[in-house]
Length: 100
Image (cartoon, rainbow, N blue to C red; front, side, top):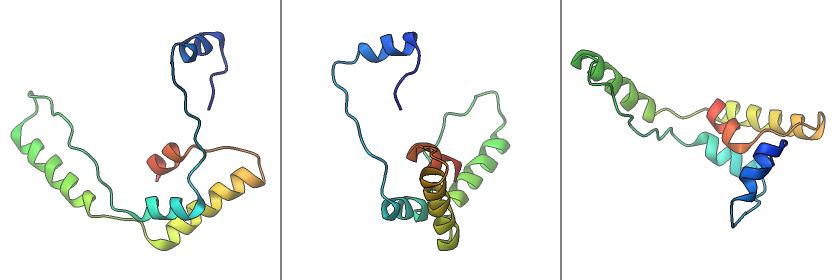
């Protein structure tokens, strides 16, 4: 996606190197979506109680092992294709994976 305003054009102009990349292929998207989540632990506010820290750590550990089923991955892949081909809408790979 390229900037659509003068301010963002000026910001883009400051980068010495620019690399334009294509979207992930449908097969690549299926591979990304079917992988287990690998979220990095985040810093926790020191004012939060230790009990809450334990709960958050347990939830994070549990979620790391969860992956989407094949049917859901196929549905998301087909939805992206529909948006792109039939409606002319672009959904970035990053946003698509984040939303899933």
